[in-house]
Image (cartoon, rainbow, N blue to C red):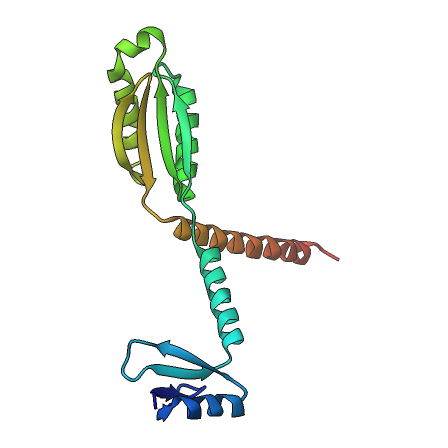
Length: 190
């Protein structure tokens, strides 16, 4: 008669029993007999509520998916002859994206005669990379792709870390906002 190693509902070892006895124990305790390790000799079976087990594992998987951070690639487009103020604005966008934990794809678009001077675009990309070294690193070096030159900058901190920092800053901000009205009320004479 085939036998199985039986594990109780609370994880305790029942021992090696016949399949019939294991099924009888499962029916008496109103639980399911689930094969846990089929390749073991003898196979390992456990007494459990299988519907509850499936529900809990689905909930764990859903929670893990919800906590997963999706890395997004943001794109910034520049021209080789960019004005200093426009450059600062675009650099500000790159800084904001990197602080949020996103990758940034920087594209320089060349038009007409600009295509014969790719070194201008290369220098601009190098300057941008140097300006944001404290927040990110160059993931892919500048390379010419037809009329465009492309470089990807990745953040030093992960998306989840950036999210946690933002949540902590938001919590501190609401605490400070709640404290300020109370101080103002205390300062007013009655």
